[in-house]
Amino acid sequence: MQLTSKRLILRPTSKNDKAAIFKYRSDGETNRYQGWIPETPDDIDLFFSRLSPEPNQPGSWFQMVVTVKTNNEVIGDVGMHFSEDLQQVEIGCTLHKMHHKKGYATEALSEVLDYLFNKLNKHRVFASVHPENISSINLLKRLGFRKEAHFVESFYANGKWDDDVIFAILKREWNAIL
Image 1: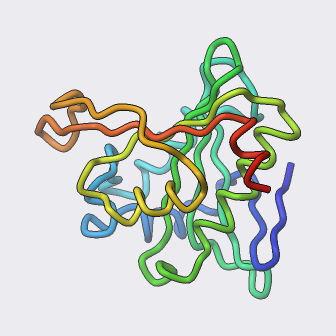
Image 2: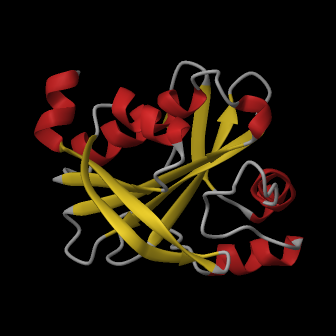
Image 3: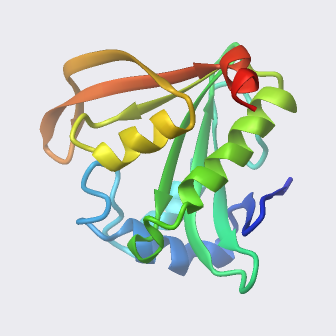
Protein backbone atom coordinates (compact mmCIF):
# COMPACT_ATOMS: atom_id res chain seq x y z
CA MET A 1 0.00 0.00 0.00
CA GLN A 2 1.24 3.45 -0.91
CA LEU A 3 -0.40 6.89 -0.95
CA THR A 4 0.86 9.62 -3.25
CA SER A 5 0.22 13.35 -3.25
CA LYS A 6 1.71 16.23 -5.20
CA ARG A 7 4.96 16.32 -3.19
CA LEU A 8 4.84 13.24 -0.96
CA ILE A 9 4.79 9.47 -0.91
CA LEU A 10 3.41 7.70 2.16
CA ARG A 11 4.41 4.07 2.54
CA PRO A 12 4.48 1.49 5.34
CA THR A 13 7.42 1.74 7.73
CA SER A 14 10.33 -0.63 7.26
CA LYS A 15 13.40 -1.56 9.30
CA ASN A 16 15.40 0.65 6.92
CA ASP A 17 13.57 3.68 8.33
CA LYS A 18 14.84 3.12 11.88
CA ALA A 19 17.57 5.81 11.88
CA ALA A 20 15.39 8.45 10.21
CA ILE A 21 12.47 7.82 12.57
CA PHE A 22 14.74 7.92 15.61
CA LYS A 23 16.23 11.23 14.44
CA TYR A 24 12.96 13.15 14.55
CA ARG A 25 11.03 11.09 17.13
CA SER A 26 13.78 11.40 19.78
CA ASP A 27 13.76 15.21 19.65
CA GLY A 28 12.13 16.05 22.99
CA GLU A 29 11.40 19.66 22.06
CA THR A 30 9.56 18.81 18.85
CA ASN A 31 7.71 15.89 20.43
CA ARG A 32 6.91 17.42 23.83
CA TYR A 33 3.21 16.67 23.32
CA GLN A 34 3.78 13.05 22.27
CA GLY A 35 3.12 10.20 24.68
CA TRP A 36 6.22 8.38 23.49
CA ILE A 37 9.75 9.67 22.86
CA PRO A 38 12.37 7.00 22.12
CA GLU A 39 15.55 7.21 24.14
CA THR A 40 17.64 4.80 22.03
CA PRO A 41 17.45 3.43 18.48
CA ASP A 42 16.46 0.07 20.01
CA ASP A 43 13.23 1.72 21.19
CA ILE A 44 12.31 2.03 17.51
CA ASP A 45 12.53 -1.75 17.16
CA LEU A 46 10.05 -2.11 20.03
CA PHE A 47 7.82 0.47 18.30
CA PHE A 48 7.97 -1.57 15.06
CA SER A 49 7.14 -4.80 16.90
CA ARG A 50 3.82 -3.35 18.08
CA LEU A 51 2.64 -2.30 14.63
CA SER A 52 0.38 -4.29 12.34
CA PRO A 53 2.01 -5.19 9.00
CA GLU A 54 -1.26 -4.29 7.26
CA PRO A 55 -3.85 -1.54 7.66
CA ASN A 56 -7.44 -2.12 8.70
CA GLN A 57 -6.81 -4.78 11.33
CA PRO A 58 -9.16 -4.53 14.36
CA GLY A 59 -7.55 -2.91 17.40
CA SER A 60 -4.18 -2.35 15.70
CA TRP A 61 -1.87 0.53 14.88
CA PHE A 62 -0.56 0.85 11.33
CA GLN A 63 2.25 3.32 10.62
CA MET A 64 3.36 4.94 7.38
CA VAL A 65 6.41 7.09 6.80
CA VAL A 66 6.07 10.39 4.96
CA THR A 67 8.72 10.80 2.27
CA VAL A 68 9.50 13.64 -0.12
CA LYS A 69 8.99 12.55 -3.75
CA THR A 70 12.04 14.34 -5.11
CA ASN A 71 14.63 12.64 -2.88
CA ASN A 72 12.80 9.88 -0.90
CA GLU A 73 13.82 11.54 2.39
CA VAL A 74 11.80 10.29 5.37
CA ILE A 75 10.45 13.45 7.02
CA GLY A 76 7.80 12.03 9.34
CA ASP A 77 5.15 9.42 9.95
CA VAL A 78 1.40 9.02 10.20
CA GLY A 79 -0.18 6.48 12.52
CA MET A 80 -3.63 4.97 12.21
CA HIS A 81 -5.30 3.10 15.06
CA PHE A 82 -8.20 0.99 13.80
CA SER A 83 -11.07 0.43 16.24
CA GLU A 84 -12.24 -3.08 17.10
CA ASP A 85 -15.40 -2.57 15.03
CA LEU A 86 -13.35 -1.03 12.17
CA GLN A 87 -15.73 1.92 11.78
CA GLN A 88 -13.53 4.50 13.47
CA VAL A 89 -9.84 5.36 13.21
CA GLU A 90 -7.59 7.45 15.42
CA ILE A 91 -4.81 9.24 13.57
CA GLY A 92 -1.58 10.91 14.60
CA CYS A 93 1.20 12.65 12.69
CA THR A 94 4.80 13.49 13.52
CA LEU A 95 7.11 15.50 11.26
CA HIS A 96 10.79 16.35 11.61
CA LYS A 97 11.02 19.96 12.82
CA MET A 98 13.02 20.93 9.71
CA HIS A 99 9.87 20.24 7.69
CA HIS A 100 7.29 22.10 9.77
CA LYS A 101 5.27 24.96 8.27
CA LYS A 102 5.63 23.73 4.68
CA GLY A 103 2.18 22.20 4.31
CA TYR A 104 3.48 18.63 4.43
CA ALA A 105 1.30 17.54 7.36
CA THR A 106 -1.84 18.92 5.70
CA GLU A 107 -0.92 17.21 2.43
CA ALA A 108 -0.11 13.87 4.08
CA LEU A 109 -3.19 13.78 6.29
CA SER A 110 -5.44 14.77 3.38
CA GLU A 111 -4.27 11.65 1.54
CA VAL A 112 -4.76 9.51 4.64
CA LEU A 113 -8.27 10.87 5.24
CA ASP A 114 -9.26 10.28 1.63
CA TYR A 115 -7.92 6.71 1.90
CA LEU A 116 -9.73 6.02 5.17
CA PHE A 117 -13.07 7.48 4.10
CA ASN A 118 -13.22 6.68 0.40
CA LYS A 119 -11.20 3.46 0.08
CA LEU A 120 -11.82 1.82 3.46
CA ASN A 121 -15.26 3.40 3.97
CA LYS A 122 -14.66 4.48 7.59
CA HIS A 123 -17.40 6.39 9.41
CA ARG A 124 -15.33 8.62 11.74
CA VAL A 125 -11.70 9.67 12.14
CA PHE A 126 -10.48 11.34 15.32
CA ALA A 127 -7.31 12.70 16.87
CA SER A 128 -6.22 13.14 20.48
CA VAL A 129 -4.29 16.38 21.03
CA HIS A 130 -2.70 18.15 23.99
CA PRO A 131 -4.61 21.45 24.43
CA GLU A 132 -1.36 23.46 24.25
CA ASN A 133 -0.40 21.89 20.91
CA ILE A 134 -1.76 24.82 18.90
CA SER A 135 -0.02 23.81 15.66
CA SER A 136 -1.72 20.40 15.64
CA ILE A 137 -5.08 21.90 16.62
CA ASN A 138 -4.84 24.38 13.74
CA LEU A 139 -3.87 21.56 11.38
CA LEU A 140 -6.93 19.55 12.36
CA LYS A 141 -9.20 22.56 11.97
CA ARG A 142 -7.75 23.25 8.48
CA LEU A 143 -8.67 19.69 7.56
CA GLY A 144 -12.26 20.18 8.73
CA PHE A 145 -12.08 18.46 12.12
CA ARG A 146 -14.23 19.82 14.93
CA LYS A 147 -13.56 19.77 18.66
CA GLU A 148 -15.66 17.13 20.39
CA ALA A 149 -14.31 16.94 23.93
CA HIS A 150 -11.78 18.25 26.43
CA PHE A 151 -10.82 15.74 29.10
CA VAL A 152 -9.09 17.09 32.20
CA GLU A 153 -5.98 15.22 33.41
CA SER A 154 -7.03 12.11 31.52
CA PHE A 155 -3.75 11.23 29.81
CA TYR A 156 -0.64 10.10 31.72
CA ALA A 157 2.58 10.70 29.80
CA ASN A 158 6.15 11.61 30.57
CA GLY A 159 5.57 11.36 34.32
CA LYS A 160 2.55 13.64 34.61
CA TRP A 161 -1.17 13.89 34.02
CA ASP A 162 -2.21 16.04 31.06
CA ASP A 163 -5.45 17.17 29.51
CA ASP A 164 -6.58 15.59 26.26
CA VAL A 165 -8.66 17.25 23.54
CA ILE A 166 -10.49 15.16 20.95
CA PHE A 167 -11.09 16.41 17.42
CA ALA A 168 -13.06 14.38 14.87
CA ILE A 169 -14.50 14.39 11.38
CA LEU A 170 -17.18 12.17 9.83
CA LYS A 171 -17.05 10.73 6.32
CA ARG A 172 -19.97 12.92 5.19
CA GLU A 173 -18.21 16.02 6.57
CA TRP A 174 -14.95 15.15 4.77
CA ASN A 175 -16.71 14.48 1.47
CA ALA A 176 -18.63 17.78 1.75
CA ILE A 177 -15.27 19.62 1.94
CA LEU A 178 -13.91 17.99 -1.23
